[in-house]
Length: 214
Image (cartoon, rainbow, N blue to C red; front, side, top):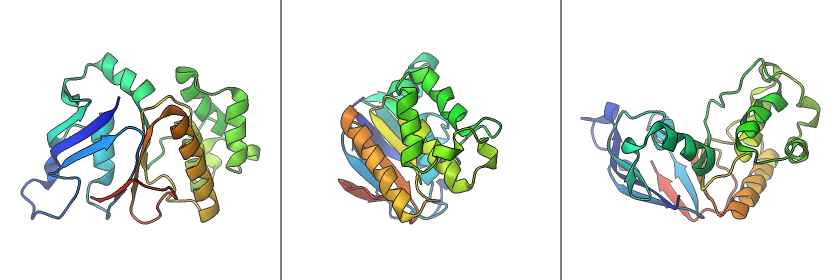
């Protein structure tokens, strides 16, 4: 996948509201593979909704979203499975970890589907993010910041054309923010992938090609 486009897209719940200046909603937005994008938003402006639309979780929007010119509303279930396996690596704001599984098991569950990282590489990512002693701890017993780092490791265990990261460092300090930025930059560079980051304040510390207001 090379290009994601939003054309006049708008959450249906926003229909009829007073128009708010936006570089995403009711615009033509083109996101290209290989570039870094920061989408800055205020709470309640549809940031997570936009991510859910692009990932195909929700369809309650007007307008059109396309992958390489194909309307995503026409994609079949097998096509969506392929998009989610090799096209888009999504880090949701709520992380969606299985609390009863350990940190490592949460990551292994994803990696068994993708076969993208070796066990040694995964453990190396845990170490880089200060979680070497937490790999066998159930996710429910981790702090929110630790859970976010586990979800980041899981997101990196995938081939992708686009990394879609919804507030990826909202619970992290500047040191961990910088480490996460290095990890995603290195992975995206290896794959020639784009990085799309949403933020309401604590931005992932990347060099961005474009900054947009939602």
